[in-house]
Length: 120
Image (cartoon, rainbow, N blue to C red; front, side, top):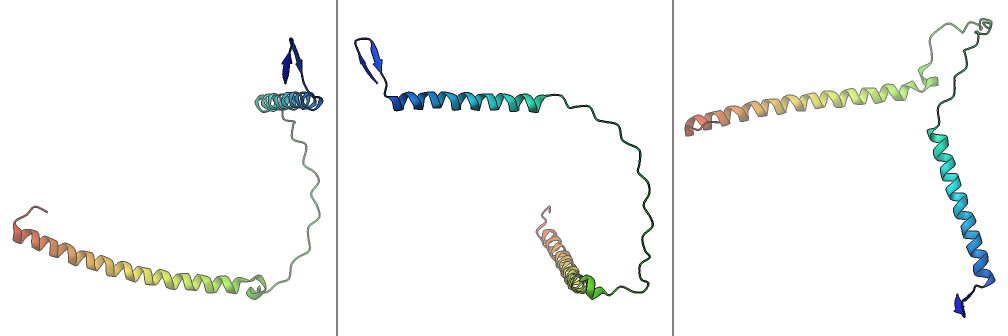
């Protein structure tokens, strides 16, 4: 912008960009205000529940007999459950070993404290 003798000259491009910027800014503000009002507005009334419809006909009876586990993909689950059960048993064994070691350590510390006449 050049100022000469109290006049401001603006190129056409700058004028268009200024008008476009003002329009975009006002649209953004209007959208924000609209969303704020819509989010804070009261909830509408709920309608009454209608009467239940007629009950449909009974379906055909399924085949009797056992279910093939391989068709349902249960074999993989059974093997995974078995593997988890094995891991759980190993973990329980580790737990017993740790408890035993802790018990031995506790008795050793207790003996050491009594020998040193220390309060532990």
